[in-house]
Image 1 (cartoon, rainbow, N blue to C red):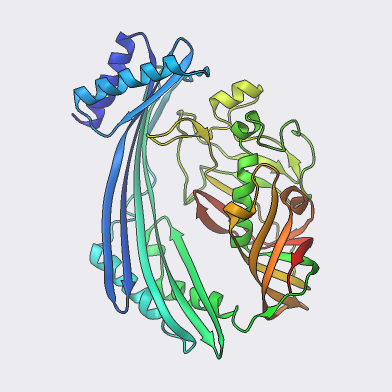
Image 2: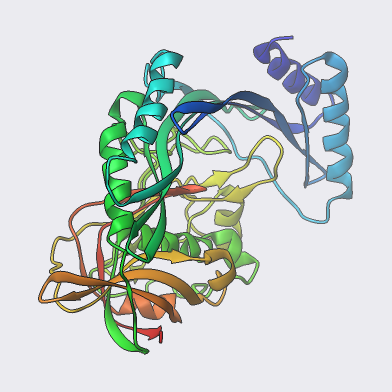
Length: 436
C-alpha cells in the first residue's frame, strides 16, 4: 500500500467509525561520513519513517503509530489509537483544517554525487592538519538529512513538504608547548554546495587555538560578552519557558507576565518558520496551522507564548502555529528558527568573552531559569582579546541576564540543538564568574 492509499484508508475508516482523526506521515533519510587518518572509516545511510495517528473519542485524544502500511497494520493502529483515547484522562481536539499545498524546501540542495561528499569529508579532515599546532585529528565528518512530511485529517487538513540540511565538522587536539586543547565544531547549511571544507577547517583550528595557554580567571563579577554559540545554548533553555505547554504545566516563570518587561530594550526574540533558507523552516506545523513569523519578546516586552491549537484554547490566546510532534510522539510545542534579533550597537571593551557553555542539561534549570555552567572564554581589554581564560563557571538567572543585556551585535550565527537557535554577539553588563 502506498502512503497516499494508507492515508485515505485511515481517514475513510475513521469516518466510518464516527471518529475525528489526523494522520501524520514522516520519513527521514540520513547520510553520515566520517574520515580519519586520510581514509573514510565510516559510511552510513539510514531511512526511518512511519504514520502517526491521533483520534478523538468522546472528547479525549488517543495516539498510535505504525511503520508498516499493510491493511492489517493500519487497522491495528486505528484500534490502538481508539483504545488509548478511551483510557486517556485529558480532553483534546483536532482543529479544523485546510488545503496546505505541497512544498519542496530542499530542491536540489543535496543532489551532489556521493563521491563528492566523500571527498569533502576527506578534505576537511586533511585541512584540520594544516597548522603546526595540530597534535592530532580525531575526525572530519559530513552529514545530511532529508525529511518528508505529509499531514491529513478528517476535518480538511491536507498538505505535504520536503526539507533537509547538510553539515560538516570535525574534532582535533592542538598544542603549544605544554598547553593542549581539544576543539569541535559543526557547520550546517540548507545546501551541500554552501559548505566549504577548507573554510570550516580553518574556523575550527582558529577557534581551538585561541584557547591555548589559558590563564585561570579570578572569581569576580565582570562584564560578559556571549558569543553566538554560548547565547544559543541559553536560548534553548529559555525556549521551554516560552512554550505555552510548559506554562499550562506550571513550568514557566512567564505565566501571567504577558505585556510585562522581562528583558532589556535591546532584546527582541523571534521565531520564524518562514525564514528563507532557515535551517528548520516549514510551511505548516504538526496540526496543519500555516507557518508565520512570531515575535515573543519585543524590545524587552513579553508579547506571547508559542502555542499549538490546544494551548491557545486553554489560555484564551492566539495560536502561533508551533505544534510539534513526531509520528511516534504526542502533541507538544516547539520553536523552529528562534533568534535574538540583531541590533548592531555592540563594541568590545573590557570583560570576559564567553565562547561556549558546557553541561547545559545538568547546569541550567528550564523552570527556574537558574544556571551554573562551566565555560570557555577569552579576556578582552580595550576592545582586543588579550589571552584565554579557563577553570571558571558562570552563574545567574536567565531572566536577570536578559534584563542586563546592554548591547547586541549585527550578525546572526546559528546552532541546531533540536530546534535552530540564532544569536549575534551579546554584551551583558555583569555576570558572576567563579574561578581560581
